[in-house]
Length: 111
Image 1: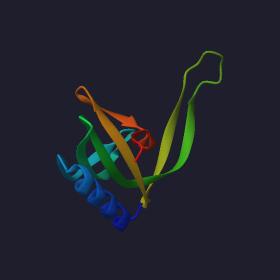
Image 2 (image 1 turned 60 degrees about the horizontal axis):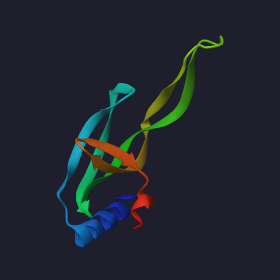
Image 3 (image 1 turned 45 degrees about the vertical axis):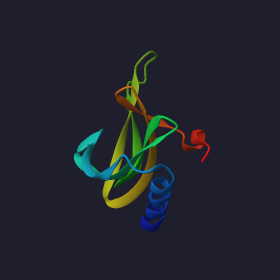
């Protein structure tokens, strides 16, 4: 999603629902804390529920390594490899559930 698309979407949300909050922040990447990602967000209420739309800009994942033993019953986990020079964008839709933001599928809103 490019900048103008993000602006159009956030303008539409503001026009239809109003904004409870908006802003920008920088946070470390969960599995690579030495790297950071920038997050633009808007928070809005719809039908008595609170939602957050995020646009995350950060290093691209260029590889995913499988880590763990090859014996039966061993746990396996994945390790992402990032390219700090290649930038990617992703959009997350979240819903406030109690005190916690939970990722949801945007199509579930029927917009």
